[in-house]
Each structure stands twice: as C-alpha cells, then as structure tokens.
Length: 129
Image: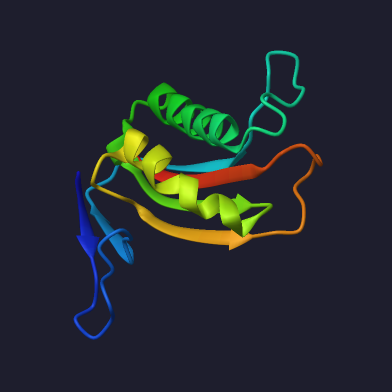
C-alpha cells in the first residue's frame, strides 16, 4: 500500500495542514466514528480539561486502527469537532504527538455542543490498512 500527500498545484499547500491524501493498493478501509474522552464506565473522562480529552480521543482512534492492523500512518482523514475554537491553539502539539510531521487530510469545525455537555472535542477518522 502507498499513502502520499497530494495537493493540486493551483491550490495553496499550507505547511501545517494536508489538503488531500492519495491511497493506492489498500486492502481495507476503516471508518472510525467520532471518539471522545470516555472513562471505563462510559462517563466523561477529564471534564473541563481540553488537552487531556484531546489526547484521549486521539488515543482511542489509534487504538481502533491498531486493532484493525494499522498504525498512525494508516489514518488518512481526520475530522475534529471543538466546542470552542480557542482550543485550536492546543491541537497541533497533540496531533503531532500522534502523527509526527506527516499529517492526514483534515477538517476542523467549531460546534455549539457535542452529545454530552462536558465533552470538549470529538475526533473521527478514516484509515486504510
């Protein structure tokens, strides 16, 4: 399988963002539902702590991908939903801890609320394995 960054020459290619990912030769596609910070009983983990919730959401994504036989490099698309756009400033370091300098194609959206009022972030993804 080959995964490579793609950006049309006529479109701006920002340094900290990936416009598109091209995948050839993949065996399986994994569609991951939005992940949030759950504790072992299904309650909200780290209420009020954005960084800890973000780390947990990305940890859960990666755990699902690894369970399917992939790695962080297998994740080709990420959609991130924040309840406050000001959390955006804390996101790059958390994403880099998961993906390194190779970033998947991504979308970031500020929303008025998530399914539980104490969740501050939800992250969904597509991976190829």
